[in-house]
Length: 337
Image (cartoon, rainbow, N blue to C red; front, side):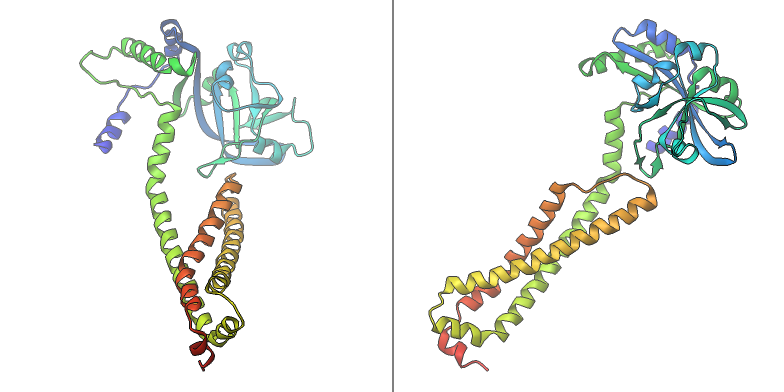
């Protein structure tokens, strides 16, 4: 089961930094191989402090593999990694908190009271799954191992294939190297895990699948209830305006004219409700996004589809009242009290 697999994974031997060199030698389809480790620490600049900042230690080529992009300055070099230089590449949140309106390059920040010099700033990426991805600091891997590896940390090896078409081959070659260096018998499963971006997206999609189904169900019920309310409103409107319908027919209005009139009214009701619903959704969405610190923007396509569905629901449930109004006999309608 998945629980047993999780417990088994906890017993695995940790990855070692020297594995990266072995993968570089044995994987022809691997373009970049980078070491990565992270931990959470307090960061300070003068009298300002930020707690629980993600400190990411990586080799110089890590930036070419991850989604971090350069906004200002530079990333650390291989030479700085070899000499354990204490330099830092900070996220946008750190810049905003410490250096608003000030050039951060060359300034010294303290990570657990250890001085690091800021050499670059990453582009703002926003939040993912409620976590602020800009609340981070990249430092050379060697400096990370020297200053922060005394406590518990997780080591990962990031690999970039030469092309998307060669990714499976790169994974196979990496697996062969790791099995050999970790002495895994041929009849045993891997004692390590290989995760791709597609696999992460699959996990996310599987996790949110039932949430999406639930939201679709709730939305469908809301549409049916809204449609029934519109139909009842239109039925009351037909009853109260029976004499008006009779007068219009008496002076020459056709069934089609009456039908279109009431369908138009049903459309206005549903379309207006759709606009109000979209406005409330956008406002509540902005409030929720602010609370969980995520960066999401409703698409124009989604708004158009929402208005189209609400309008279509109104038209569908307005057909029966409109047809009932259109079929009224003028004489009976005029004598209605």
